[in-house]
Length: 404
Length: 86
Image 1: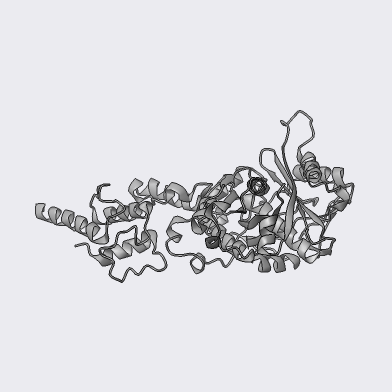
Image 2: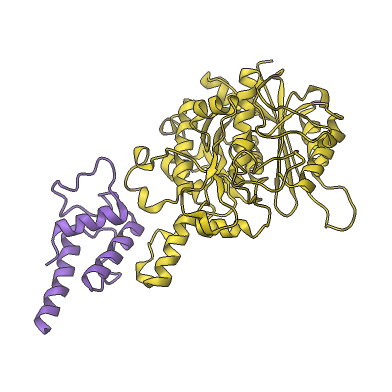
């Protein structure tokens, strides 16, 4: 079967714009979590977020695109441009049906949608932008990336909350196995606006702390919720043959993947995450002892942290593998979180350094070997990324370094 | 009176302009499609013109082949008809 490999990445993260800036910040433990500036959060119970700073859309995108795009789409378009440049792909040189786009989304263009719903409510239908017809649609990032680069091959959008960021990459891999040469994949979400915020508050899982260093503490005794973030990463996924023919650098192969769903609550049955990990490793034919680092979902909710720690220790043994959660520096970015973790995993394998989990004093009860304080030197044969979505989604994706 | 400068301002506000398209050039008789505006851009532009000038633009005007001159003429015909009634 055709192997699917990553040949390019584009990053828009709260602690760094562009893969280089993100990686520098992440290795140095620099967090992007702070009090919200997109709107005045004073009257809301949760007031911290990981916002992407210093992003001026008009520096990157034409004035034709600005009136028709939500922030999440602007970030996604720029991340896609960077990923293509990194992979040295010039879409104009390739047959348009050989290239597809599969992204994940968790909600859609909420800031744009809020503005137009406000126009509808306060001024009337004739004041609603014609672009509302698609700008707030959850599939819009795939569509706009596809239009911008003339990519007419198999495309789509995957929606399974945070797990979707891995599920989209798996769907992209399916298309490559079926013969598409290049698929842009990953996800960018951005819903830090009042409407997006109240929707997120409804989960009851947001941290209400005002201290950026104490608000999001997965696997810590003081864990009490998470901080949302915005941004994500877009990856160029390509058939191994195509990458070889083009003579480009390969970051890693998507060697294993599995998705499971949790059983109905109250039945006392085991949650699905351990099985997802086991199935992903089995597909890649990689034994647990050859997994060099795990990027945790890191919910920051005690019960969910326990479930994840039990799944990881069941597969790898107590303190059996280095585990890290660089999302402690970005917040949980919904569908954008796992693609950003994939970018971090690719860069970790590239540099032989696992980035740290910040602010966390690991609770010994979880039995995890959490990378804290500073980056840790690791072997870089493989990296496993975990992601879970609200309502019971579990996904695991194993990356394999072709250079070891 | 609705002039090209008004239309240009509304176009730029509502839909922007493609790189490589010079709205200050001789574009009065170039179709909106050739100027890089798809049907939604035209719909958005028409909506803004209707709001600002209190006119009603029929869907039959808003075809792909419509040019800035045609649109300006339709708006001005309505404005002068209204002035004539008043």
